[in-house]
Length: 89
Ligand SMILES: Cc1cc2nc3c(=O)[nH]c(=O)nc-3n(C[C@H](O)[C@H](O)[C@H](O)COP(=O)(O)O)c2cc1C
Image (cartoon, rainbow, N blue to C red; front, side, top):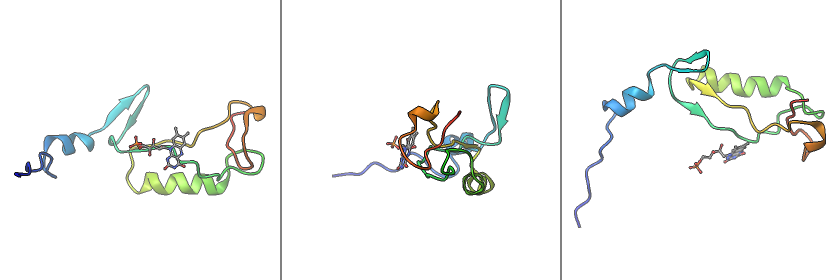
């Protein structure tokens, strides 16, 4: 059986496009690498942003991700499912 040669190489147009800036709404991200949401449970006990959450996301942004997503956030306190569940209100 013959295996196909890889079609994506480091110097390919696809990968160079990944490193190009992209505008999302009114913001321009420096590249198209996106950190997907992860349930870190780094909100404080009341669901607010904590220093630990900021440090976690900041480290990923400094590492080069062009767009960093937060984890899922409850839109209201009554919708929080667990301790340290992030919330909007
Ligand atoms: C709100 C939210 C929280 C998530 N939390 C996690 C997580 O804690 N761990 C994880 O592996 N994936 C988590 N995911 C999924 C990843 O963000 C991502 O979508 C997934 O890993 C993409 O891989 P796939 O599309 O190949 O399945 C979460 C997704 C959402 C929308």
